Length: 208
Image 1 (cartoon, rainbow, N blue to C red):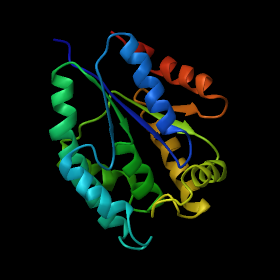
Image 2 (cartoon, one colour):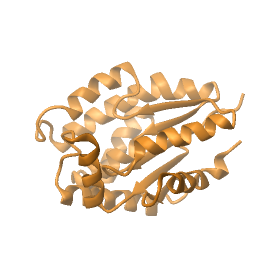
Image 3 (cartoon, rainbow, N blue to C red):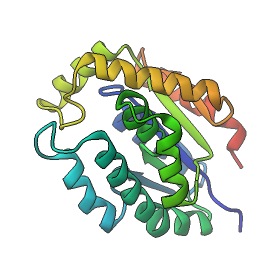
């Protein structure tokens, strides 16, 4: 049996990840591929419990180091309990956020340094990497406005300042420069079908 693939969908707030996750899943399913949709933080019982700790409460509930450790712990459980079993049976996993969010949010915007956060991932998840990370990009101010319009009230990370979200975008751009084969920047402007087509083009080489 052919091993499956992992696609991580990334981006700042309000870039349309939820819409595109479903669109990608539907298109892959039409090709006869089993798709497992998951998310971070979360995606397994233990990781979902940590998600509540991370996203609820006041903005200053955790410092950047604590956030990074909690994300790494949640991801370790997610990889072991959900992702690896799906890959072994040949399924494709599409995750709403994965490692590169931690690198951009806590590593770059949080000031910890991308390499230090990557070290946590190397220990917690044995440096497991997605086959492709697709980063939906919009100007941070537009993305935050979209997120507020959609959800009404952002979570404790999503509600941070425009400067913070600008640093997140800079972090994603830095990752794409460092690992251009794995991390692809995808323009999230335009209608939904146009963005989906851009995403599909970026994973065409992975198709069976």
